[in-house]
Length: 357
Image (cartoon, rainbow, N blue to C red):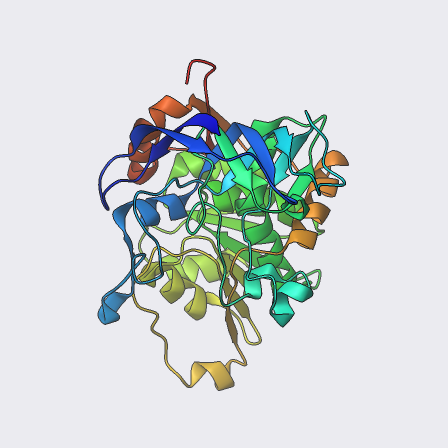
């Protein structure tokens, strides 16, 4: 058995608690990694409070989704390979790896085609399996590990969630013509990564939208063509004017009633609205707009393992601008959660275990 320290969710809505646990030696194609970086995602906030906001339909609890306490959360994980199972063929001891956390059932058509995020029975690391808010993590199959030797683990680790989430969504958004504009709503960790990855994928004419001028200034540095503070009078008209009447695509990384209202009304005919954020609430728009504006409204959930590998190749080729990383000791996880809840984080908080833990 391998002793390790984790910061676990013991009770819904309560702070993480430090615990001592044990993990078995890896068997078969399992791999034990020593965690060196774990990103703190907004979905971890939903998980901590124990539910998702369904607006008028109430709440969807994580207990209803099969989550059980105590739980080691954290799905953005990077680390060093410490032990491998006897059937491991590719991963090597000491290798630095990034974990693909969106593990599917392994037997459905989506999983067989490496479309794990489309699996209806996902076994997500950090939700259904022990996650990365710990000193060690046992990964069930080496195929979920990506070699990141030579890269900074803290810089790379957000791509396991925020990176492939926006990469997948941008693929669904599709290409734009030269005169067309796209908007990225929300300039948190998802939004910052979306701006950088959109530029790397060849998107031009990008408007970053937020209500925080500090984050909007950072969005400019990340490559946004224009920025728009939506917390103002007559925001809709001004937003449409900023896009010269050609707002064709919106990627919503926040996902609230207010952002969906703005997006669906600002989009031009044949516009495409892709939602990845899950702040919650109701989605309301006149039904006739869908046919009359020939509008596409589509959700997008994380991404698949080939997309993550492609994304890391882009990182290695220096095609993606690095978003701000706020590195903190894992022991400060509860303070980091509070800062993220207050909206005072620019970029991504990455937690790193100390040698004493």
